[in-house]
Length: 91
Length: 320
Image (cartoon, rainbow over all chains, first blue to last red):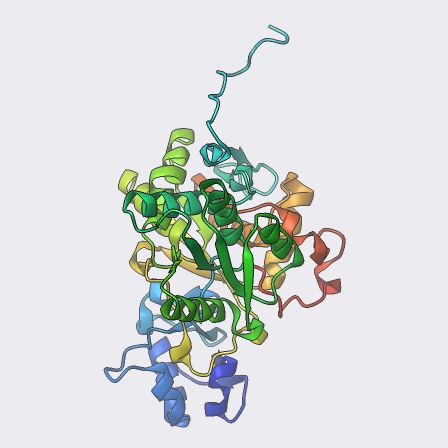
């Protein structure tokens, strides 16, 4: 089952867990499944229109889904979804 | 003829700021995974302060001067975890602008030393907030004191323009084609400027971002809405965006030195790892990646004398 890695900022909404197994075959299905189990997570992950919060970066393994098929990006059963906040970089 | 000139003589620059740019590209034959794909590194540590940010600093200050956005002797204030501040230190010192930089408290010691050497005043932001904290504090300072001029590399078009008109043109002069260009994603300037110009030349060129996987200890945000996206980033310009862990970045930084003799900073290791991954995926072509700075600012971290398992504070340090 796909594993979702939860960043520290979201852990209070998932009872403190750093990773959660959520079934699904696309990023959207898995994140919505996470939000169904933990409703407070949904408020942070999604906008009112159901789009991914612009300050959330989501990766399947190590690739950003926004540069793939967004919430429709396929997820395999052994894949890891990484949720990260958008952080300034750039030296 | 022995002892004769090998190249045309270089022009003499009127000052050190004029030396910025025109950096060499080197082929990496040992790290290239296959013969049909050639791997090249553009060595930005040949800039005067040793990083790619010299291009950006000059571009931002000279544009501000051209647009009369900055007054003679005005204090420049900028959020930076080091290299941009150091480059601004050079340019501002040469042009007579005092400089104040805001950076996280958990960067390597060498960056602090270099900034002070160039005369910059340093304001430290909370380390646990990473670069987001530095941006937040700097914006707050400018709002409260209008005497500052903030170039704001994250939202200043002069940043990607430095690459559009400079770095990318140099790459196109040196190479007949670019199958993939790989750079670090920080402010977004390198990828946006080079990406736009390289895709104008050849729309099939893949623009690939290597992104740091920030350690949990530097993600100190209260909510996801505290996140930050540099205004200059247009994600539609990217073909791939790949996370690199601090550990992988360090391992590849070691490889760059021990296998190719390139003494580079940790971001370059991360970028090299992604460049080699792209080279593995391609059938043929040239893969070019940017080496943003050299390794001197990371010597105190003992990256080249210890294995990654022996290093301390790998995840709590802001490496790039």
